Length: 107
Image (cartoon, rainbow, N blue to C red):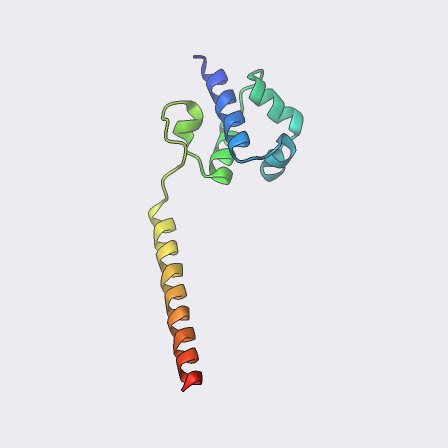
């Protein structure tokens, strides 16, 4: 399959999987709806910058967009994982403090 057609199909599939119309999808990328339509129809191939923006905005892998991989979602970076764990720890501490406050006020 031609790479442009593969990318076109993946972009359209992603948009539909997200439940977005073309206008909504474009707004987050800062591109025109007519441009997206050209990408989805395979008449124009998106630039590397646009592909990167799609991958970053919608958390999909570039390998998936290019049709190299069937794994749609990108793996989290180590920084993302660390940030998630820190937020989780903060939530746990808040919950424990809240529980202590409730127990204290009930006694």
